[in-house]
Length: 308
Image 1: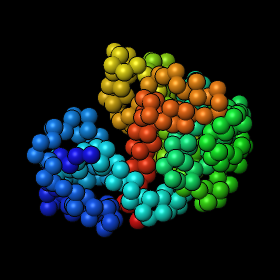
Image 2: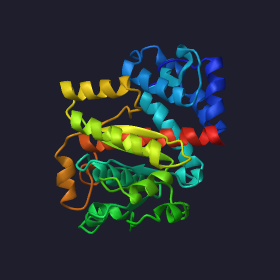
Image 3: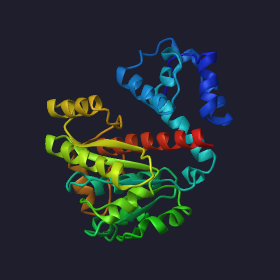
Image 4: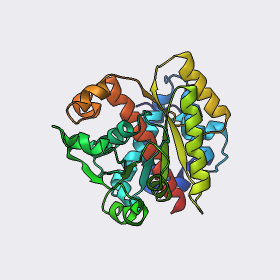
C-alpha cells in the first residue's frame, strides 16, 4: 500500500476528529517519502473519499482529504482501528439490513457473502434469515455451512423486538429480508443501522429499488434511514452498468463505490453451502466481496466515531 502524499496540518485535525489517537498516529507515521513516485489519485478514489466526507458533513480543502492516501490503505487503517478496539461489536452490535422488494436482485447472495467475509476478517457476525423462502438457512445446511457462521431463522414481524438484543453478542448482524413488501421487511428496516439495497443493472430493477426507498421513507415511522444502493450482477464496462450507476447518482441515490459483478463463482460456491471467499479466496469474486465488506465496515466505523 502506498501513501500518495504528506497529510497537511488542517487535514490532520479533521482526521483526528473522526478517528482514534491510535489511528491518527498510525496515519501520520506512514512513510510520506513513498509519495514522490506514486501514481496520481484516480477519479474513482477521489469520489469515494469525497462521498465519505460529505456523509460526515466535513468541508475541508480537497487537497487535504484522506483521498491523498491510497484507498486500500485508508480502508485497512479503519479496519485495523476497529479490530484494535474490539471490532464492530464495540459499536453496540450494528445491524445491516439487506432489503429489496424485487426477487432475484442478489439479496441473499450479498448477505451470505458479507457474513462469511466478516467472519474471515475476525469479527463475530450473525446472519438472520428473515425470508420465508429460507435461502440462507438452506445454504447453511449444506456441506460447508457458510464457514460455520452463526445463522438464525427469524421470519416474523417481532424481529425488531429481539434482533437488537441478539446483536449485542455479535460484531455485526446481517438481516436478509423477504423479496416483497411485508411487516417482516418493515421490522428489519426499523432496527437497522444501515440498509443495503441491491439493484440489478436494469431499468425494471431500478424502478423496484425506488419502491424500496419509498418503503424506507414512509413505513418506518420516526426513523431517518442510512442506506446505500449496491449494484449487483453487473458486467464491468458495459453500457447498461455505466448508465444505471450514472442515473442513480444523478437522482441523488447513495451508491456503494464497489459493485458485485455477475460471476459464476457465486453459484458454484453455493453448491457446497459456501461463498467465493471460502472456495476461491484469491479469485475475482472474493476480491469483489472483500472490497464491498471493507467499504461497509468503513462506513459503520465512521458513523460510530462521529456519534461517540
